[in-house]
Length: 551
Image 1 (tube, helix red, strand yellow):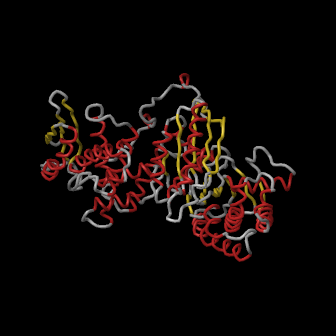
Image 2 (cartoon, helix red, strand yellow):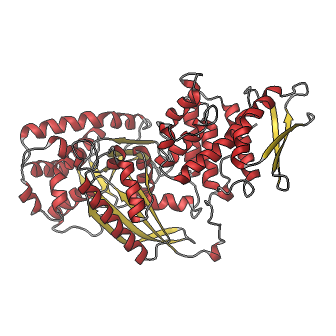
Image 3 (cartoon, helix red, strand yellow):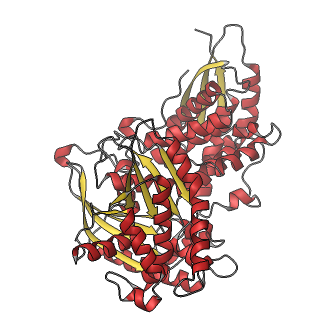
């Protein structure tokens, strides 16, 4: 039995949105926000659904320095206050431009801060804005989406360098599905705070910082190089504020002005090295006198230039091209994909999720046939009970599918308490295409496929800060328990199941078709009697099972 994909092409548009024929489609306005370590950026775009394509109609940027951590590893009260205020302004601007939605993501600083989730909860409460926390690798994937929306690769390998305040993303692609994604904890704010105490930077600190950057970036660079095929030459692309600032300095020095836009501007490694050497000799006041240099950028530009220089040297690139589209635009493309507005020719949304879930299952040696059977059983149960026992939509269905595929991952560690091990492995897997909140939900659904019911005393269940998410985990894990029971022996004893809901008697009937004529599926039916109890209590329904004659 081959598992059906979690979402069919016709249902890639998440509930409650519905597909519109081209003649009924209209331009849509979206705001995309990147809550970064150094700055909060927003772009507001107009999406022409009939093409599809988008144009940027407004930009907003505020340097809030969330990465200025307090001594205890928390986001400081001052930084959080600046962040909340900036996001309030962003929301007001988005609403004034009649944005129908605001897609927001948080990256390195919020990921690493001890109170990062507290900050996001505060934003939800005070701003009314849901910000999705994404992993470093997912950040790299969306950067790739953004860059591809702004330039053509012509099937040639391009290495993209994105230097943020807290991390540097390095990725490789040809315009087709990415070949390599990485995120390294090397950022302009992070390094300035950790290594620079002199102004201008001393020779000793400059030498140490350069060596540190090479040591941290080298593993990612070498892994990227290994994905190149013999004879392929590498082109370099640079994105985001630090690299844009360096490009502006080089352009002004070479041309006497800064091109507007910078998109497509090229500079050489030699020019970069000359400017890195110049910047290291200037104090803050002198750096502030440079063209296109803000106060906040002047404070961190030396560390940023070093990161770029050493990464280019290790990659063997002698020039770099600027792309002004990056993470924020990638968030826009990702939103368009989830809304079904663009053809998924590069498999960056539904398929990237599907592939990364199966990759994780393979990594933890989850047998393919049993995992797909359980996924089939639970999706069919979800569909049969939708509108009767629950009203979850396609997005939740996809999370259930992922949990079903990965629910037995914990066997990789031990059979004993494997459901708890599954939670840990899923939670720490790089599931591309999912936000941190979605991964937490998937891990919790898998955690409760057996044994204990969800309890607030469980640390993993407490990690679900939203009542909506806790309800989702409870209801979907109850469905998963029923599906797991139907494959109790993991041998495919149950060929298929048909579900019938009887609203008059509030009953759910299961017609079970065995795979073999001489198998009474006693183990499955016995296990179902146990596993259905929570389902019955939660949904207030009676579950009965009937074994049909084999075909």
